[in-house]
Length: 338
Image 1 (cartoon, rainbow, N blue to C red):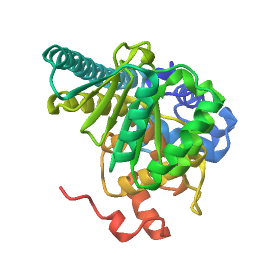
Image 2 (cartoon, one colour):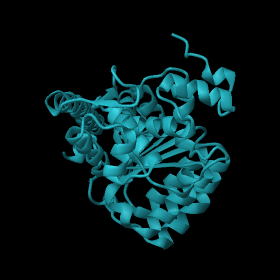
Image 3 (cartoon, helix red, strand yellow):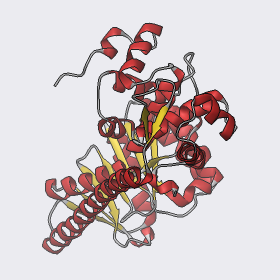
């Protein structure tokens, strides 16, 4: 069974074992698979989330395994829904990109005052510094370049530190290929520690810098920033560019940083703690995924891990246990307002 269906190798092992031995109890399944008890419980939780096992009606000590004929149809339907959603996001991004190109062509031809042309590379850099000094709330950036040198990353730190120190929200999207570039990873770790956010995607349509959702800077040609750039301020084109950024950010993957894996005194990462808080309020996997910035499948995996940590058989019980242990407050365990 491919992992693309949401089933990892060890999860598949447990499922196949249960199919081959449908009448065996938990202890026997653990002996056959050779898995530790805690790991087997995690995998059973994942299979339960995938609707491939459920508690037996006849014997509380056994889990009933769902036949592949039924279970695979459920997984395929779920995967098709996820692919359809991803395709729709891509279509929205393409539409936004086409709108930007059309808007830019019109204002460029009309000589609109909302467009300012920059030609020399030094002029572009100076203008970026001035614009950044005027930012009050937020910077959003697409950076579709190749690997950056350690020197370039270090040179960017003073300005980034100044912006973050003023409370400016910084969100940057890089290419997935840069995940193997040590200087980029080191810079992303530093940026995250300072409060910035970094994600990656397989490809980007354009280099872009948006400041306070009112001013944007893009190159004249996509592949060569040294050929010049334009500053745009029109409401229509800025709305399209912000829409393109948000659609791309939504499907981008957070770049792994040191801070993401640090655990608190409950043994939870920051992502796990946030998922637990949102689960306790009764939010859906899809809502939580958007809020935390991960996939719905990742939310389900984290939920299964939390249930195992809390020795809970359901999400409701996990929320109750978390409140009992003091992992969440009474306010956090209250249902979200409708």
